[in-house]
Amino acid sequence: MAKALMLHLQTPLKALLQPWAWAMRMVVYWLLFFLFFRLWFILWLRQAAHDALPWEAFWYALPLDFSAAGYLTAPAVLLAYAAGVFGQKGHRYAERLFEMVYLVLLLLAIAVYGANIFLYEEWYTPINSRAYEHFRIPGAMLSSMSAAFKLGSLVLFLLLGWVWWRLCRSVVGRLPSFTLQKWEQGLNAVLLSGGIVLLMRGGLGRLPVNESSVCYSSETFRNDVATNAGWYFVHSLIETSKAINRYKTYEPEIALQLTKELLPSPPAGKEMPHGWLRRSDTLPPNLVIILLESMTAQVIAELGGMPGVCPNFSRMAQQGILFEHAYGSGYRTDQGVVSVLSGYPALPDHSVVFVPEKAQKLPSLPRALKSAGYSTAFVYGGELTFANMGSWLRHQQVEHIVSVRDFEAKDITQLWGADDQRLFRKSVQLLRTLPQPFFAGLMTLSLHAPFDVPLEQPWQLRSDREKFVRCAHFVDQALGEFFDKVASEPWYANTLFVLVADHGHPLPGRIPMNHWRSRHIPLLLYGPVLAPSWRGKCIGTPATHHDIPATLLRELGIDRRAFRWSRDLFDAQAPAFAYYSNESGLGWLTPLSTGFFDFKTKRWSGSLTPLERAQAEAYLQTLYDDFLAL
Image (cartoon, rainbow, N blue to C red):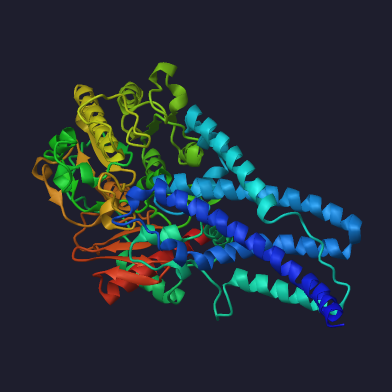
């Protein structure tokens, strides 16, 4: 009798527990998936850890891992209950749908978590919406990869897909059929669904789980290891798709007032030049801006960097005007180009060039100079379809555009295109043909991973650090050859050269991208048109990319009022500060202090005063409002 009663009770109990057991197996499967990719992340990027490898991150990662597992499990549970409602025939269809949906989800997850590892190696930030912007132009992205890398990635992708699908069939099993024929089964479904929702939300707390839930260290890399890449990527896509300001701290009027105090409007009418540029009464000076890929201050001796790496730059610095405290506001080439040419600061989570309807509304040096009678050109040894740069340059009235497609096959010596020696040779040929006065932008590419410049000596290749330094030396050699050649050109005597990096780099010192030292870049004004009394001067004012247009246009006698985010760096009355940002946070520098605001922890680090912190937050808030309104 008792045994029969026990069997009678066990049957419905087993039926009630079956959905929970199956859902738990699905959660465990995804937790194992996250564990595998986090282990790969740590081992592949182990050099980014300052001391011991962050094994503790596996524990701190659990809140976001459980949340991501909940989101990935929810569709399967809904399918299982749907199969129970529609009977045996419905179950067969649901099972096929389950296999299709979860195979696609699995392959997408492998792509995202795998890409996170390789993108972090380049960007030093978890995969985010900015990566999606690049994925939307797959042709340009794929053209930057070697055939071996593409083939290896495809083989690895398929292998991981096969292994993890087999594990899914083994650990999770086939789709069960959850019946809802009795009230207790219906209640069980509600409870299980509620449990999944709690898993997704991160518990019963007042606020749902977010990135800050896994931030446990003052070291960015450790927090990034603990961040679930898939959860972060999807969250980033959702947040950046909203037309709202995620960086709002103050009432708009207060933020705008604080920002206006930092960026006073230039006076109407003609401004008096500072006198650092010699100007002819008959012919305005030519302007050549050389954007140096990844040329960090860490390899420039005059900026506290390694001696002997860039001797030609050092030689020119003795005859030019060197800004000792210049910083890249972004960390990507597309951000740097827009900042330098349009005077628009880099945004933390967007690249304005990817939004054509907004990018076309920006002012630019090429457009302003063309209106003043200049001819305009831009030369790059790589592919300008990457990051939508070619289209943007044409909208900014650049008349002559040279890209990798204009080089002969024998000149494509690097993965990214023509090396910098060949770039400068091509540039000399083009500059000879331009009517004066002219503006030209020359953008290098040799100082970029995989650091494959055609130079054998003097540095060996045992590490990325040595490869980076060797490439920087190669770029400097190419610069020296370029200036040796153009010195005899008839237009040279009437030309101002601006040498500036498109962004900084963690290498060679492996400095985190949140730190101001990784954003420290060279900015040099050089050429025969510099007034002799100014040559060899060093300017200590904090400077950024987007200050270049206003600085140049005032001295050229051209209206600069359209460049509202750009400051004249020679104006002693203007507030002195520098701004930079990325997905992780906001950096701010003044002549006396530095600080960084972490978006995840909502905390400031550094030595900024309360007023300076308020100014920095207001500046970003107003900048983002301006971006949304473009």
